[in-house]
Length: 144
Picture: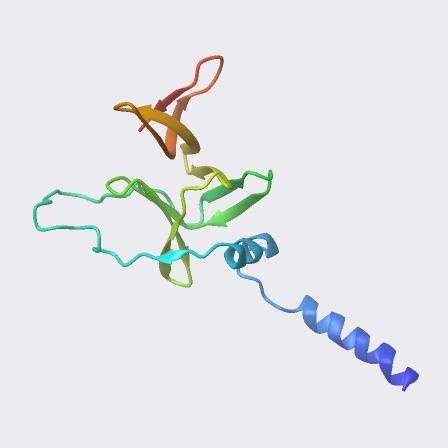
């Protein structure tokens, strides 16, 4: 029994090292922790809306980085920002999922666009959202 235990342990540890993870173990953990809602293209459109172009900030695929509140950084993601719905959408296995607006998702870097989760006041209401940072310093300038 003992002579089979060591080779079995080596075999299992070697097989685990050859497993493919699509992005990173941190991303897999994140995916398990949050219930992402599937986003079907077009579900946000109504007949009254008529626009040319796309509701998304254009960026290269796999050029996005997610910064978590616990200072974890997950890179090489496909994330798009839906301007009309004011939501971040994450692609996994060819399907987009809505990233919940929570403080755990502290910031997003979409190519040259940098978004931070923040609380702000609008029309005497306290709201939360992903605001694009235009300038940082003593006074930070955001756009909604």
